[in-house]
Image (tube, rainbow, N blue to C red; front, side, top):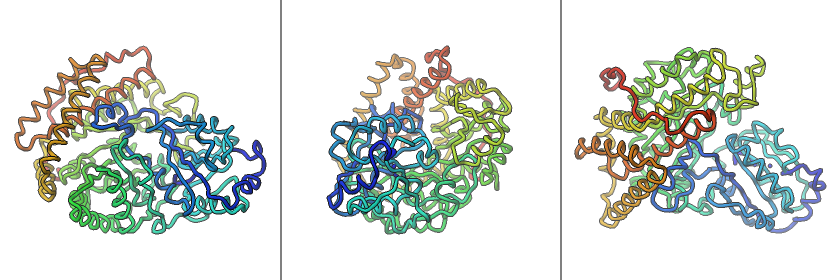
Length: 566
């Protein structure tokens, strides 16, 4: 966790007594990550289609990181509820039970903490949610860890083991020096149940986006690990058996100089071991303005990058202080440059800014379609506690936490219209034809993208017969599982037909066509997004029928010709 927490000591006696009870012993520690509610970024509905027994897409970095901070001599176990059920009776054997979690996990965090109350171990809580809304955990735990905990968490454990006094609340006086962060314990992670590992290179972001809690928690001066630290973590990820790794920095290029140093180290590491890891990350849109960064990321085998585009409307970007998206040429030109450099662009979009009127839904749709971004994550603006946005809306008397998913009063439309527009936009974007049209058009129209990916592929070792057979079996498994899922849901005839149509369209590219395995993964991911859209419609507007989701988007005017830097 970026921070860990326990229940109110009043219900269990002074904390000093708890410390005395375990003095001088080897501590037994369990760290729990609560399950996530299905969401766009979790890929929950795609997981059953993937080969193997995948139960969660990405390892929550807090788990191996917190385990890595435990002082030598103590026993630690990791429990990810996204991978395995919690046996609350079994938790009685632990001296310390830690619960971490993000804002999106808040409800399940509270449920778990309620279940932990009768247990004898000390219950501690940390992570992003307790950091931004500490008051919610009063009476639910013994100790709270606020913010980063590289110093406070191991000191707490040392004091507890030695019988020294411990506190009910910990918060570091200074931000963590990232060059001192211990290596995460990926050896404790059940790697076979995940698609991707996660590694953190930096914390902090130089920008001032009003809605973002990252600069509140980690500051505006990016702090980075050394190249050797990150390479050691990639060694551990590789040894654990992962083939994909997410660099979870909120802005990988917050410190461009250090990012370039790391990328050169990763390129050498990939070449040394035969490119064992495919990488992806998040970055600010100004990535498009640094050709050297783009080239290094492609050579290091970064496959995808998530960009926080938020909105094509300039007034909304100014309002939220996302000025980095307004500098230089257009957002569309920047997206195309990143793509042409050999990176698949995924992007986040937000609805509900004060400058958003009802025309924003069509404006967002047209921008996304023209950009050719297949994987888009559209959300309603969320005023996270501690952020400048939350403080401003509170001053203006516009907060309303009683009516999710719109937790505030919009200026230029009603809450109901914002929710309806959100549903309709997502339904249009993830109609099967719309999704695959964007994906194939973005791939087909960029000769530069295909050439750069082919150049990186040429640097990699050629797969042997055994590897090719494994891939063939994996492809057959995915195809069979996809067909079974669609048939069970009653969608094989309509969605299956669209998938097959676009596979044939893809095959027209000949030798440059997207491979069968990659295409099947896109089908699985589309199915996931499609299911999320249906659940949104059911949850927010029960009168809507999921079967009414559009199957085909009416044609728009042809997009203008695009070229590098256009």
